[in-house]
Image (tube, rainbow, N blue to C red; front, side):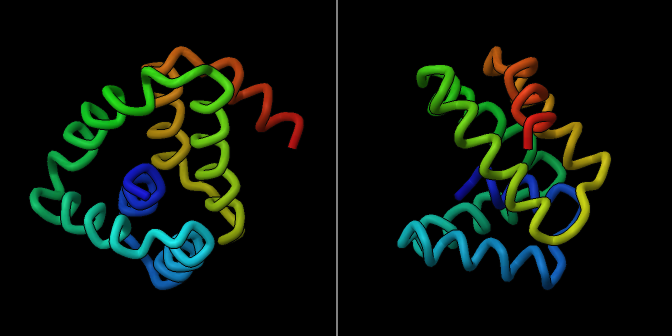
Length: 113
């Protein structure tokens, strides 16, 4: 939920994005995790991306490639639900993909979709 919330907060969370986050939390039975993620981001919005990036690198960055790709692509798909993807969101996801060594794989998967 931190990954999804982070990307949606990247340019400021709007009502549609909040709805998508809540739907994801419903699907994953992860409302407490979403609350934690939102609080973590709110602690210091200016450093939220770097703090989250560091934490996610420790957790997700160590997973097998297919799992990392699955997590990041699910965020990409959620962004598409709102009908657009901002350059800032795409850049943030590509930076995380680069950190995790899956940038090309993410780009290939997006092209396939």
